[in-house]
Length: 315
Ligand code: ATP
Image 1 (tube, rainbow, N blue to C red):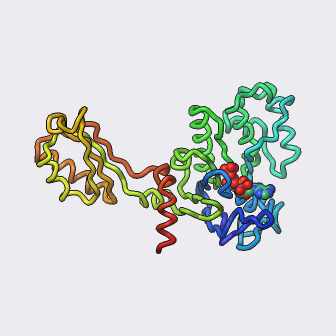
Image 2: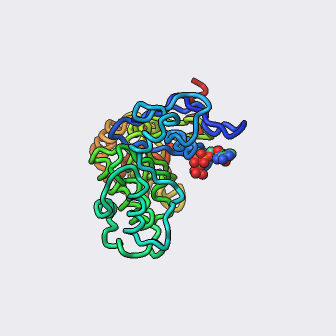
Image 3: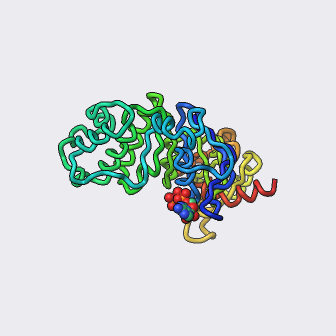
């Protein structure tokens, strides 16, 4: 539904987006991530046809969004970082105003229901909480059931509860077939919502792919505490594919044989290594405390980014 090929966007001499490619298939949720100034908003604006790329090619619904801006806008719902709400109007009147502006047909009650704001329809926009304002912004993006919604930091500034409410509205929307392209600074949000991701670094693509591919780029982690002796522990090293790190539990290293060890295994083979650890514990008649195992988080991928970029450069 969205195809970006080697797109570059400049402000004068400054290249804000430098040769970025990404694909958002119909029905997908794609997260565009990056530090402040990485080029996310510039790229979103270009995808929506508000600016023309210096080079490269962009297609939305198969069309060039710069040349066919009104066609693309007619099928796209947009939620910007800055909202254009009128404080003096009621929630319902704000949407009625939107009805007059939008090329798409819809009913005020339907979109208020979708974003869970029906009970606030008669209050002035000025009294809405931050989360409710964001939901009203979202209602305008959803107006007329667009095929694609573009959300620029939809949950910035919201409390954890409101963020989760927004996530479930986005998921429901996607379940009904809407394609979503969003930016966010919350890595847990991207990991929870998106099925593909692009991480920009100073205008360039640092990481991109399906969420599972991207998470698999960093080893998974197994952690546990064990009262194993150093000798028993040395037997574990040859059984797992991952790297084992051990630190003594207790006030000093002299206590380690009495209190045991805290173990971390970084592994590319999570399932096999979990099985190996459990077998080893059984064979040595050990109980493992605080046992945890998980694939890498998007946050770990993000903070490993410089080495990923270096890795790419070296290949
Ligand atoms: P943030 O997370 O802070 O919103 P972003 O990833 O969306 O950042 P952009 O807003 O796309 O980043 O900005 C990319 C770069 O382009 C930044 O260095 C910014 O200073 C620069 N930039 C943005 N708009 C303009 C402009 N109108 N004129 C000149 N430079 C600009």
